[in-house]
Length: 243
Image 1 (cartoon, rainbow, N blue to C red):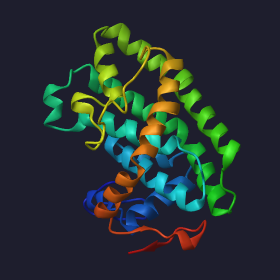
Image 2: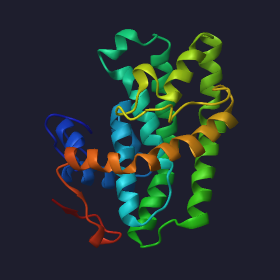
Image 3: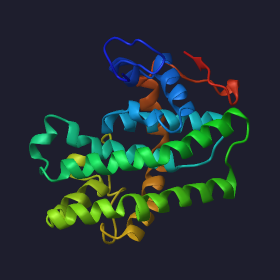
Image 4: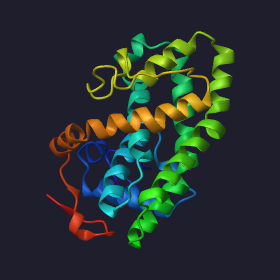
């Protein structure tokens, strides 16, 4: 059932749970990661998947992982989730909506087992650090851009050639696709050809991660205001919370 107004099991949560980072939201995510080949099915919208990435980025940090792919995925997914905003939707080209939904879903379903591996390593006290973390980020992002979404880009551009300009706006965090009001001074500007996997790989690995690191303090402050609880660093690899 996943997101619902009346949670019935450990895999269920309410919208308020997700928005406020409650214990029930945490427990559902952790349980779903244990279902590595099926847990992804519980997340039905771009926004739900974006909030999962947000949660995972905080958990991986507590577990000691130095990977940055989840943070970059969160930022990009939040930009994409604007197609689900009823007001912004009025001004976003119709062709953008199926592209965003298909691409986001494909990436999430593909990476979920890899995130489950990372989560389990954290529980065992074996975090990804240094060169190993860097290699994990690069391998995950390269596979995502070259193998998972490149066919999706090609398919939708064939159907709607004019979509390219809108894709560039989204990647750059401009116009309707600003991330949390933080895309100032062209910090997310996309350089290159949005239809080339290598250029998107460079954007994700160099530009989006740099954006996250640059605004990490502001992001953490926003999380603190929004969330009812936060991961407890003293819990090590285990999942615990403190107010």
